[in-house]
Length: 257
Ligand SMILES: [Zn+2]
Ligand SMILES: [Zn+2]
Image (cartoon, rainbow, N blue to C red):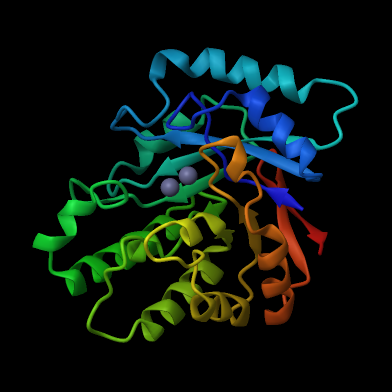
């Protein structure tokens, strides 16, 4: 098992890399990835620029340890910001990365992932259309290896008036054409929507379009590392997935499940 999505005190997580790593070892993971938030707006929940060198040396030191029972991966969860692709790429070039998760947390200036009170005044149909336009554009940008929590628009339990099925299928097609991997992100189960990201229907479309999958708990606390993983592994197998994507220096390979 692999867990490719975690946060530490370098962004909005509660624990250090070493504390999180110890938990990953206890969970018997084969690979564990650190993926703190990187956002070119530099909000307080993302890595601060002045901490880049310290973060890089800390992860490198952990990766170089002998006799670790798991492989440690250097990842980042990076905000896709439309029309700022070059700036994002320049920033990514500063890190010796194994993989990059691309996430959409902003629609316009609104951080819909944290500002729950924003939904009341929004046209939810329009919000969903805009979210999926951005996630598709993010996949096509070539900046990312893994698309993060791909239906997070449902987080606070607001749903559009239209059927989401066609947009799921269209998005899965774009992922396939863009050769990106999706993550089955288990954090949604603990949010108001009480569902994994993506939903079963969306996951089925991804499978049908040969989009590979990996796993992420989006842990912000050690207790959340690998949450619900036995359950989602069964789910993936039922759908037909036989492998999880794994990354080293941004090269993809597959592990059997
Ligand atoms: Zn996120
Ligand atoms: Zn995250």
